[in-house]
Image (cartoon, rainbow, N blue to C red):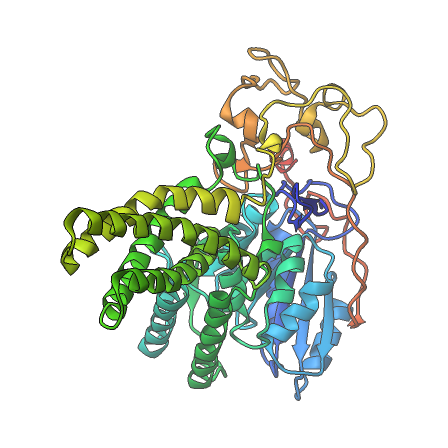
Length: 553
């Protein structure tokens, strides 16, 4: 798994997503966590059914972890027995209750590449498990969720739960601008490097854990994949709907307030430039210019209305020059704060005083323009009406808008991610030996794009061939200048027609993975049942064909 990269300013970011290799012998690819509390009746059948399904259908190494959070019945004993008798199963005991707490504890210490969880009642059809984790394995997405509200989902449940679920997700869309359709379906997965950055930001330890994790991931720009599921309600569920809904509403208020204040360091979850192919499609245009223009215009429109209201108010007891200066000063402070947060995406209180001071300089320019306009009006007409003054002020403010935007963008809030242009966005592949970025060690001796075969060689695929020739397997080579070759898109059996992986510079070198986290306290952790590589499970009678083996590779 790639380690963290750094932006040109030195801020740590998430590594570019890459397809996981097919032969991972040191650790499992998937860790399925089943959080339980007093589930002595359902735990045994659930674990055995999930294990049988994975052994039959999942082509990578896997592990099943039972996360018991403060059960008071026989659940801990059953979990320990399953860990002793079922290969690839382990149990973890927590002394405090809370699904979010259990998932945080297990996911934080897991060494698997992809971390998933499902409810013990198995209301979700297990045939959705492979589509859930496939986009994470292929490097297409950061998180994946099962959705009961997707158009093609098939759900069987009572009207009460249907109403509560739809109402809750409607609240999320209206209050937190959530773009995902189902926050509470107990069927989710996340890539390990994303979880390591995301989990410390999630405060909830109960049922709101899922929602908070998804909202923060979406606000940070991470990609969330949704899978329509077949879901049958468990009539014996012990979840207190009313209490859970109340706790969720409290969580919505807490997260919304933190986002509004900019108190969450979501920049920790940023992906490096070039991870999204759209980053390199347009050259010579500053990043985010269109979005910033729209945001600036919206903020400017509201600021102008605010300024005019203040001017009309101050004009009741002061002259035009004093009323204009006071109204413009208050509006300038509000405008700078709004543009700082909404237009240029600066969060937190760091540098706020300096930004306001620079904004006051911009305010001085606007004051000079508007005051000069008023002075010119008085000189020309002698005693203008208030309506004429307002019209002249509107024209003066519109004339200063362009200059104000340029000053805010270039001086007050400069682009922190690309202070010297976009040198890392060059589409040309490097030639000669490749040098690893500072802080990541050195590339292997003698490593060159030509000798290694580029990304294809690093991931176990065939080396590049000249356009119009055939590869060793008989496949026609793709022109090197095409979009697929540029961004590393190729056929992928787990992710439809194409999956975006091996992103970034074509011949970049991925440093070795960091040291594994400390092991979890568990009652029994048996050795894995097989090498964590592609192929059939030892307990399965199905044998893959040669075509299947090639596709898994």
